[in-house]
Length: 523
View 1 (tube, rainbow, N blue to C red):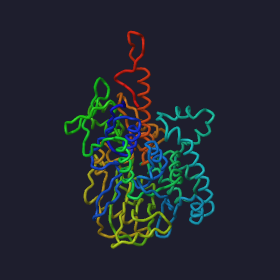
View 2 (view 1 turned 135 degrees about the horizontal axis):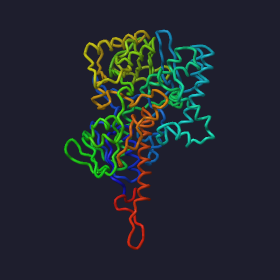
View 3 (view 1 turned 90 degrees about the horizontal axis):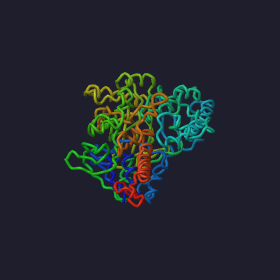
View 4 (view 1 turned 30 degrees about the vertical axis):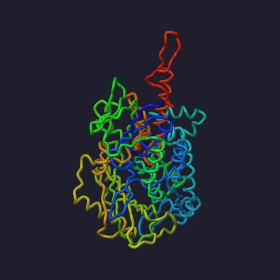
């Protein structure tokens, strides 16, 4: 007989932990305040079209293959997945353009054609270092237990691998480290942008984040229906294993009984009994008292100054012209340092870098629109912004200024958008409303400085039976990392339950040890 487990939030971390724990025989209920699952992976309706309104880049497919395999299924039985030929298309103006490819040889050739032989050699050296950092950190950190400092992780790795441990470069600055590989500032900018994948400023981040480039080099995948389809597939998988979903139900309070979790009270007044609770909300919501004053003591508060980036995001159905879009496209600011200086000062950038996902395009060299009746296509446009959605109101005038700045960046690179265009806009205020107590920070804690990655909330909290998962927890932000957090939470719970079985035993008069009726078997 398994434990009763309740999970607050059906984001990627919550979905992954729900499926894994149900596969182990536990009685799992997921409580989700929205009508959809996936957390940030959602869709919005614009002009009669479903626009992907959350993350768009899918890497580390093996994480999800593992989840489905553990549950006796295959990922490809639930969704259609294909590998992208072009990782992303990059532009600095209407003449300077560079594609990166799934094939590293083609990327090297493209970089050589774009910036010369020295840049191609720099790319080879960079790729080698990024791969080494990834391989060093993959098992002990990305897929391993949380450490409060690098020392416990280095100990697990073993002293004989001290060279590998130092190769992580946690004390070196990312921007400066990229300068060792790339004399061309455009390439330094291109690879510095990977810091924003975890909501961080590339000028303040550790060189360790070079590993993000290797996660993309291992493969970027396209999913029919987008990341929201992956979330729905995880829900279907979890339901097949017996997980119950309470959609449109809001968790009001985590019940604490005798200093241990006892369940969840909903805003409706109903209760969901549980001996174990996983919070798939941002830990800031826990610390901010969103689930009761007792639960607020379970995790430390994070200073607002440590928040990751937020974003202005346009979801549009619009005609495009003048630029040959691929699926993933990046249009760079001519002043990258100035962009992050603006954000650091608490304002949207005046001359922003713009990411555009052309959702109806393939990720091939030539990515034409599929044949259809009208010329509009589904696009998502992202501009980084400060996480001030709980303290700053974005007026109509400010939104118009930001929109004009976004359009100007695209126009400089040769892309024009229909004007006006059918769209919806999400600001940091929108994200704060969807994910309370975050200020709209989309990635949890920013990875600024050598210790930041080790200061993310881990699966265990100060309250027995209460655990955390999600993109704001260990190991990092992003779709696969959020799923890994769910796997870690499930693994930690199984380990804690096994420990309880070993030590919580009752002695009978005859001297025979029996399992505690309270803990029982975990299946």
